[in-house]
Length: 232
Image (tube, rainbow, N blue to C red; front, side):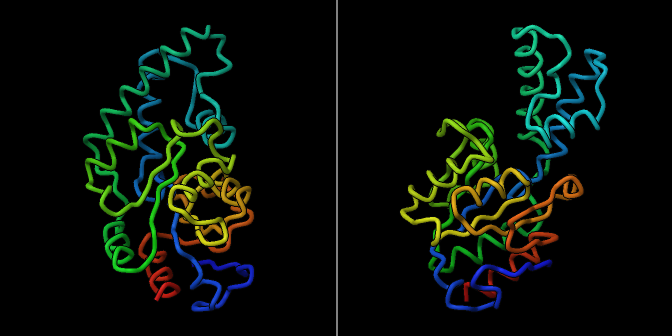
């Protein structure tokens, strides 16, 4: 665990920490490990089409810049849509079969379900992907609300997803703590005036700065121990 100085509440069981009435979780990278799966789905298209793209291109464009790795290759809009659709078909089928649940997630959620706190998911993924994950692993029973990119006009780093989720859970930003794994997610939380903790992404942390995060955690088990402490 790498705790930075939390604004107003860096000590474990301070009064400020007890004021949290909701935890807002990102999905991809926090609840489930889909990052490598998305690259593999993308690579399936790259290999099949013999495209001049590498993993480094994927990280630079998709992970850091947030644009399609297929952009910039002189494709027409319709050709680009076809490539993305083919990748999405690979990805959707992979979500149904691969073991993507992060270790200790059930332990975390089972523990939190016994506490007087609301839980929500705010993800930039499409609803069709979130639905597969929620249904496959039986996660819906743990959460009081979920907001996907289908529900907002602007995705992360815009705060819209978390603001709408907080509104659905009937809490304000000062009452909710966000759990993220990416720079865009941290910025989204910050832009919405939420406090945010980071579950460090095992693949892309070296590309992230996590600027503004109140604390960094290496795995779900470490995060679970900390949340259990501050919410007790």
